[in-house]
Image (cartoon, rainbow, N blue to C red; front, side):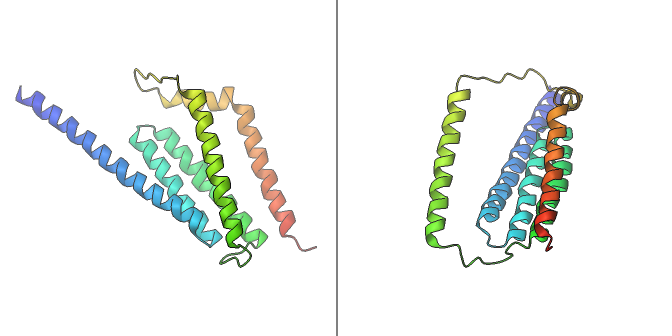
Length: 177
């Protein structure tokens, strides 16, 4: 009987620890996302984005989905952010304060962001309000990889070609001749 109580207490401690780590990681992600969109330096914004994406990978690890976490780090942190930084450096974008950004542009950007958030939120609520997700047991990660490389291989390859085209476009824009 005492062993069962100790095991239950240990499981409860694990659940509390997971909740604490979830809240800590989520707080870092929210702060980093806020800094990503409010910083005036484009390179710093990309680096704050790295923290947000790494936090998402950490959340996947907390969910027990290591394959998705590793994919998140390799694809988004490793490839997409490097592509962003490469594009920023090639196009010689403004690295600091932008004097052309006036208050009127900021107000319009805030209005568009709020409207976009409302439309997206409304569409999600309308589409999924009656949907319930029932998970009886965790699915093996091999199902995810099999789906990506069998059922969704065309979309996966299309995204890779799109990223290659974006990289070539950045090089063409950056050339001076």
